Image (cartoon, rainbow, N blue to C red; front, side, top):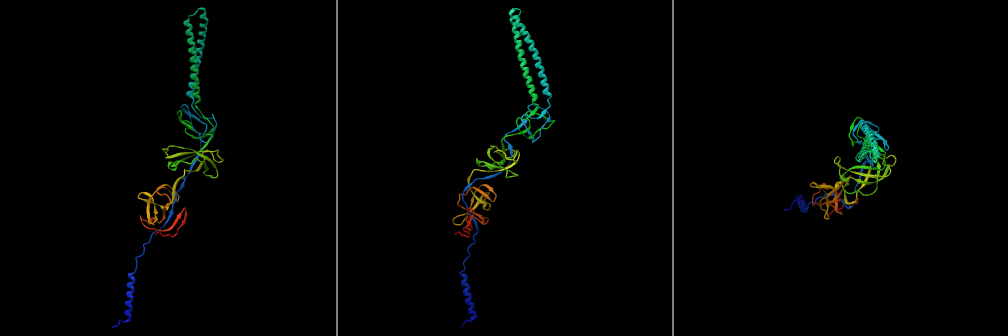
Amino acid sequence: MAVPPPLSRCFVLCVVLVSGCGKEQAPEPVLPRVKVLQVQASGYAPAVTLTGDIQARVQTDLSFRVSGKMTERQVDVGARVTARQPLARLDPQDQRSNVDSAAAMVSAEQARLKLAQADFARQEKLLPKGYTSRSEYDQALATLRSAKSSLTAAQAQLANAREQLSYTTLVADAEGVITARHAEVGQVVQATVPIFSLARDGARDAVFNVYESVFAEPLRDQPVEVALLERPEIKVRGKVREVTPTVSAETGTVQVKVALEALPAGMDLGSVVSVTLQGAAQSAIEVPWSALTKSGHEPAVWLVGEEGQSRLQPVRVARYLTGKVIIAEGLQGGERVVTAGGQLLHVGQKVDIAQTETNGHAADAGQVQP
């Protein structure tokens, strides 16, 4: 019995569909697309820009050498002074009393000496004639010598009292500028306690306070340019002459002093300045911020091996900069570091490289690793 034509066509169509379903293959997995950077080791010299001020090379704290009540102050902060110029005075009453007492002692010893001289002169005339004894002569001589010594001591005491009186006037020991005041009129001050700070004329330094970590590597021994902060076109050359070996307990910083040449017009004592210092060159690798991830609690980067598989490489970061980080350990150079797309990776996963960069240039766009 013959099969009707419509049923025949349906049967053939079903056979074809069943046959086609049997030959269908599973779709290939979609690989994550990433951008990589083929890194190269290069010499990296860290640079740091510091802000500080101009200070005198020699700064002196001026103080009285005697204690007393300050009755007069003749200069203020910012005043220019000359050598031996009076700056302040103490009440001199006690010192004047000491001078008067010492002067009276000198007068008494002078009278005593005149008496001893007259007595000795008589003994000296009477001894050859036999009108006096040798012992009386020796006694007069001893009295004369004692009177001379007492007068010398009294005169020294008077000179010391007058010197103490002169100490009630505080004078500048050199030309310069008063940079600080530590006492006021009416205050009772002790000897050696600073009253003024004096910046002496002469050599000038640019002084900067910076954190110790900035100078993990020694600074290059080379000239630097110090510029006025508000007017960068005003510059002066200098050279780092001192980095303090200890960290300040108050600020946690070290002090860097740059010896300056003659200051240009507009750059004066106390001016705020800036300088860029270059550290010693060291071998390091730069990668963009986007390449940095972490392995546990440590920084790491994703690498793509020759087989196109990803792996996580721990690294040590030397410095974080704007837009990039400096890798000190963990990379040798030549590795392919993932710079984009690393957030979707896991260890051993194959990737599709969308772009490879070398020394800042893109290449191999769309390359697919096996």
